[in-house]
Image (cartoon, rainbow, N blue to C red; front, side, top):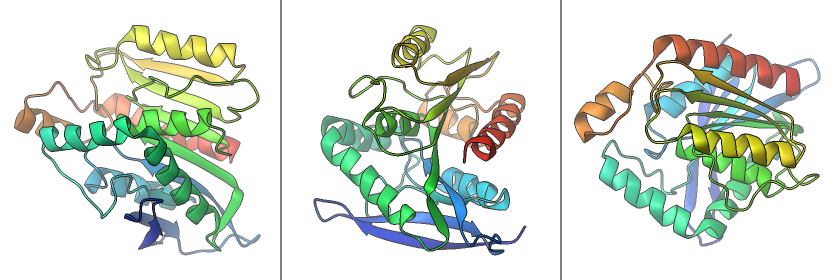
Length: 245
């Protein structure tokens, strides 16, 4: 399938321009609109990996949008800088969630998108973003997380968290513990959220990102690409989105 790419610019409540990366199929479905999948990136920002994710999703038939959470298109491969930006966002969670909602609304308003069929795939920091958006009642149909941080801004509430959830976690992840994942399972169960949690043996934090080994080497952090887990979790996520969107 051929795709096209462009930039979707929205404005955050504090005036920051948000330049998200859009990939979409060039063939319009017979009903005129496509389901959309937001891509919430790792703490690096909209670098090559989330753009590639968006392009792969577009080839699978979705309008896909890599979200510029930091604004101004900021991105980095330096862990100290990434941590500083992420921490700044986490300390101002209202602004973070407001930015996410602005991007969601901008995507829902695209003429190519069926606004009632939107999901999100979040990676690491983006996994937390994806879950928190659903926890706050954003009308997402499906939430998929890859090596995501499950710590909630506010825990899921029955009837407010309406998305179905698919979690891909690495058993060798030293940054997100199995205890945290068990806590997420308990949280979603209590809120009667439909969910599935897959644990991939031998997979470290960042296992879905082909650049994880480079980032680990450059920054001295415990990341690692795991090709088998990356492929298996990707295939499952695409099918999950097709089933629910």
